[in-house]
Length: 132
Image (cartoon, rainbow, N blue to C red; front, top):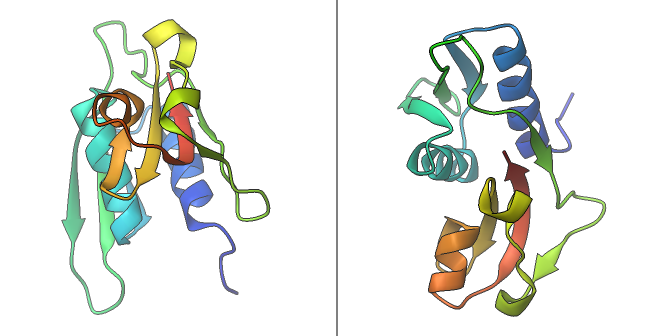
């Protein structure tokens, strides 16, 4: 059976692996998913990620990050734009997540970037998810 929203599946796998205290989680690979993982790493929400090639679509392995008290770095991760309802924002409409404590991942014409990067480059796009 085909998956209707692979990005939501990725976010759910990361959320569930964090609650189960796994050190890493394997996700079916894809370009957009790899770019989202890159933004999460740049913003400090995951330790690292690795794309593993296989004979199919590949596997994206995400290494989760925990603090000294074994709390997940990702408190919440939620999908904003869905296949049934896309959410686009212009640069002036982008608001900080939790007054700057979180980050929004935005798909722009210059690639997948964080909300801070989109504001600094003065570009808008589709809001994929919010993380804090």
